[in-house]
Length: 101
Image 1 (cartoon, rainbow, N blue to C red):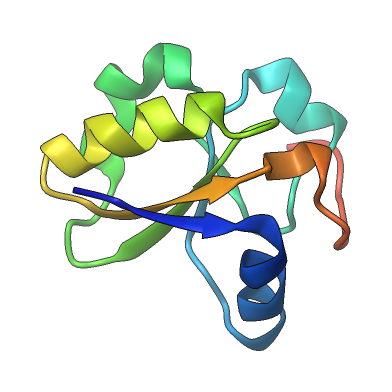
Image 2 (cartoon, rainbow, N blue to C red):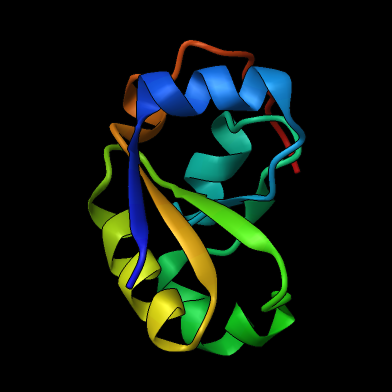
């Protein structure tokens, strides 16, 4: 089972804490703008990259609007990871955005 958080709650939490954020959008979307410190693990390659994550860490999963992050959260939770799906995603993110890798 995974948790869900709306973007406004996530933005407040992110301002106060250093969070482990996983961006599951594709590489071109990530490069064009992402949350500073977010790790890129595209949903299309998540089965191959999930083992790079630490099961003792809590992760916040984000995509463009919430659909892909929901799928990624379901998958990662089924593997035993502690994940929270960030609903609304980058389409409504009001914080700082950085581009590039």
